[in-house]
Image (cartoon, rainbow over all chains, first blue to last red; front, side, top):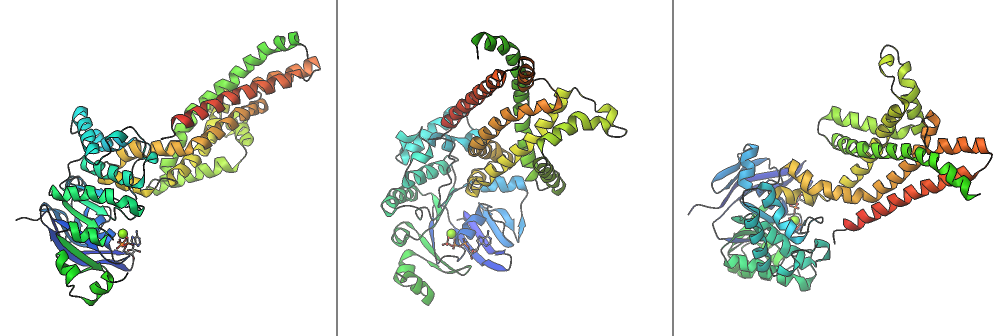
Length: 247
Length: 219
Ligand SMILES: Nc1ncnc2c1ncn2[C@@H]1O[C@H](COP(=O)(O)OP(=O)(O)OP(=O)(O)O)[C@@H](O)[C@H]1O
Ligand SMILES: [Mg+2]
């Protein structure tokens, strides 16, 4: 089976700081990968590289077999846009557009890109809002929503472009503990629908529960990877054990 | 102060106020887009463009508006060789001075507005497939104007009062009429009437911007 995401020898540095050191992995269609690891280990940088929010210094990223970057050389701008358009991303701080209503947030990109009629777009935005349980909030501005609601809107917004791959960078870290559940439930539903996802998270029980595979990142490398049973039940490395037992 | 006198001088003074309002409208309509353009230039990756924008802002904000007006009205024609082509109607020359001056202030206000926008907004738009230009138009500018709105309101009210500087370049406007009447009739009443007219204009503006701020509260 061909892989959805293929990453080879990925390297990234900020000045003299090597943040990613030869990262290799691949993700199959429908697979859910949870990325865990200490602060500063490069989790966000790795995720952001996949959607070209960071430019790497070396290595390759192939999405659906198409090279976004190959041996450190990036594709042409138009190709980059095409390749990354199959991926959606959900951020820790939601990054909703405050000047648009919930519906406006969902519809901005599809309406701007004009690949579909406005009726189709409007129908899908209502459908997706219903899916994340916010059908009644369509005409509300984000400033009036709770954190959990904002993040569910952000997920619906990412889904508007029918992505094949969804990336989450700590989707619940900015939320009050009692609001994480509603967001995690939505992500779990997506997993059940076989959405391919990479989720950077500090929610260990959620990672164990929803992921097919866990990457433990440390110091710019995927130090250890395996099924949740392997990583949580019988980690091979001392540092993985230390990280999992830290609190 | 008798009412007949007030009514009698109000006619010519409102005439003067027309010039004031005309200047105000011309300056607002031209200097806001100019400010926008200069802000984008200042952010440009093309260094010479950015340099021109910063220098322009620095010069216009660093020298008195009165000096700039005198320069455009009386200085330009004195420039050797090209001066003879730079003789404008004084009102036009004053408009030019005001637009350039206010353009610099608006540029600075908008720059502040841009700085206040979280970089997550750019990132979200990019991941959603918007181009830089689409992001600017659909995501950034609306938020920038919203943030800048109170400062723009402030600046507009200052502009109403600054129009009185036309007096110094001898373009007849509200204050000019008032002063003439005071000299002629030996009474302070025209100054009071002028004050009331300025207050009315700033009141209308204040209400207008309050309305805008409410309309674009995004909640
Ligand atoms: N734009 C940047 N410029 C310079 N250094 C950066 C930049 N972004 C990240 N870094 C550094 O790169 C390293 C990895 O950062 P990254 O955000 O990927 O870590 P992370 O694993 O996501 O951490 P966290 O769990 O705190 O989110 C850190 O040392 C960070 O300080
Ligand atoms: Mg991070």
